[in-house]
Amino acid sequence: MHDNIIVGLDIGTTKIAALIADASGKELKLIGVGNYPSVGLKRGMVVNIEHTVESIRKAVNQAELMAGVKVDSVYVGIAGDHVRGINSHAVVAVGRNDKEITEDDVRRVIDYAKAITMPMDREIIHVIPQEFIVDSQEGIRNPIGLTGTRLEVEAHVVTGAVASAQNIFRCVTRAGYKVKDLVLEPLASSYAVLDPEEQELGVCLIDIGGGTTDIAMFFDGSIRATDMLGLAGQQVTNDISICLKTPYDRAEELKKNHGCAMGSLVDENAMIEVPSVGGRKPKEIQRKYLSKIIEARMDEIFNLVLYSMQTNKMTTLMNAGVVLTGGGSLLEGSVDLASEIFKMPVRVGYPRGFGGLMDAASSPIYATGIGLIHYGIQKSKIEEPNEFEEFETMEHDDHTSENGSHTDAMEKQAMTGEYQAKLYNTITNRMRKWLDEFF
Image 1 (tube, helix red, strand yellow):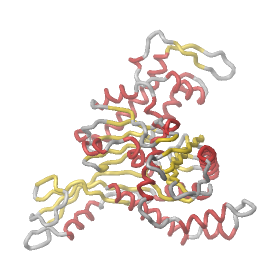
Image 2 (cartoon, one colour):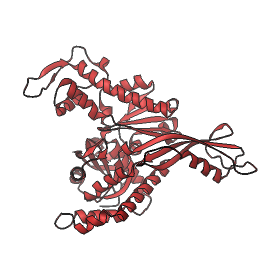
Image 3 (cartoon, one colour):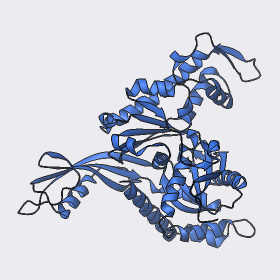
Image 4 (spheres, rainbow, N blue to C red):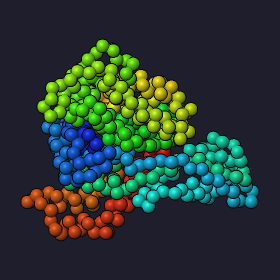
């Protein structure tokens, strides 16, 4: 694969999207798009490795056929299920006799901010200082050199279950592709749908996928809070299926073709046909009834996002409003309902920034994939060694042997404690790096 060919791989709960771009010319061109149903994931977490591997292969193969190139490495999006963020406050006394704040004081107050209670299976990935306070003077970005007796910090502590990243990594490498980088999906989507001005003013990005709703709140040019909801498009479809007593796949069609997230926008007299189960005849219902079912769940999702904003004390900072993206943003009435709940401007975020076949990937469902390519293009300008090369070689050799089966020796090597520890540390360090780049 040519160095100017960049591939983004969005591994979602309901779909896996592979997008290939050519960055060799003055204009960035999208040259391949692959989309295949995701089998083996639940709420963004891998529950069946073999099924996930097969879905990844088929999505990438579709993109390869369209682009006419062979893919060997990809930028991979990580679902937000295992990444959580909480706000923390800490205070220390200034150490020097002359009361000048030093790097040691800043280091101590940030260490105190890490003193939070969390489950044993999670680890602190990063501590992001939002502001420092010196003797009640707020809004200080860099307190070093100032004089004071009391130093405080408001920080955003990001935690994650690194095992989840390991599972995503394994699926990609077993499918036969090298992992160029791991990128948190809300951050990737922000590359594709947010303007720098919005990030400066303050904006909340809501990515409504199939299994999860990922939330990222930006202010003053950087991300200030992250959150994840275990409610998204699948729950809306499930509600329709149960309430209307119709098969799940037919409920999905009803949602896409006739759904509306706000019942007041639907004509009272509009009727739709609902398929039944067990050979029973289809029935007719008011479209407004379908919309009320959808509205109830979308209202819950948006109110939970609003609660997250309030919990993180970000509501008054969202001066640019809310940007919806992902498949859930395509529901008719979603912008109207969100505007009513958030009491602020709301728009749908469509991916942009490419020529070529961009029309084939202009939907919000491709926001993360397009964002991964934007991220990859920026990273490719800086020559960096592939930190995953050792593990990619081990996995690739194991699963692409001549007879196509696992070799016992390599399987034992891959499952050793040393291998697991090295992979854990590599992914942890990589996640710290890309968080550093954004914060």
